Amino acid sequence: MKLYDAEWAPSPRRVRIFLAEKGLDVDTRKVDLRSGEQLGETFLRLNPCATVPCLELDDGTVINQVPSICLYFEQVHPEPALLGTGARDKAVVDMWNRRVEQEGLEAVAEAFRNGHPAFQNRALPGPHNHAQIGELAERGQLRYTHFLQTLDARLAESTHVAGEGFTIADISAMVAVDFAAAVKVGSTEGYTNVERWYQAVSARASAGA
Amino acid sequence: MKLYDAEWAPSPRRVRIFLAEKGLDVDTRKVDLRSGEQLGETFLRLNPCATVPCLELDDGTVINQVPSICLYFEQVHPEPALLGTGARDKAVVDMWNRRVEQEGLEAVAEAFRNGHPAFQNRALPGPHNHAQIGELAERGQLRYTHFLQTLDARLAESTHVAGEGFTIADISAMVAVDFAAAVKVGSTEGYTNVERWYQAVSARASAGA
Image (cartoon, rainbow over all chains, first blue to last red):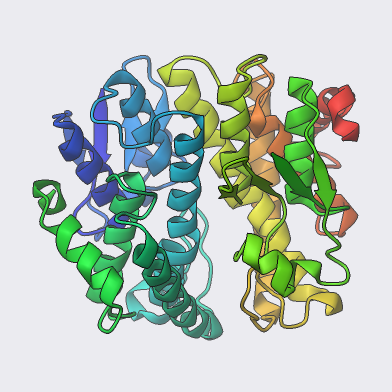
């Protein structure tokens, strides 16, 4: 089994934190996103989506979506459970993780990739080029503000994003917040519930992964 | 338990087909999207995301993401399995379902909602208004063409989207294809593997749900 990982980018970090929480050590190979290694022939043969992370299983199967990689590890190493336990909780965790992806991570990516000169013609990840759209940079910023409002309201009533316990939804949300701060799309300042929660989750050893 | 459903829209249809495949009959209430019922105070109290479908459990929990609703039913009624069995297969099904959502369903929605006069200021679903962006209508159309190319290549090597058996990924892909045809974003004509697969999946009794 081999995990294809990359520096700096938010998606591979989500998997690294997940593995750190599980206490798992997986054979890893770094892909150099800055030189465009993910768009080269060798990598595209492995993962035609041109995305990192991806997990290559021993039978050659390649899993290239973050939550699907996490689902694989959750089943092979169920403890500690990070995707919920029981039908209701699993559905709630899955829902919140998806909401964080759609309303948080996607919003930051929309703002960043459509606004930063380094992503000219790379407004979307994947094997195809797409031009930047200036209005999307603005829309992404606005959507991220809406996300922080939603997250703050949620964390006013709940210790963690998907309920009382720490789950994959907290990992995704923490990565979204760090990503937004790093690329100057938004800050949690003034969102007191988000700040309380962020202090707790970012103090976990896994956050350094 | 109550399922909030709606006419015509692709997302509620995905859940209806899933339930039909399981042979489940769930208490259902129709939401009138054409009159904007999902944006009214009563519905927003139930589901602040202003989206349909959503599933209200007996303890008051509301699940408002399609695959999370399906995950709930898969656990309570495991047969027939539509999310895969075993760690590898569950991860593969989850990955393909996500790819169909991102590359297929989102592409059609991007083209449709940014191009149709009925969606002025409603370019994204949810409680917030967003203006249409003309370039996104074009981009969505192009992305859907890329999706059909990917799907055709995949179905050249595999009976169904996520492997040999019928899964949630087939439901999502069939709904994407029907949605694209209905809103004139694209047609499967000339994609021979997609057409072979489409004939098979749309002949299932569940497709009428």
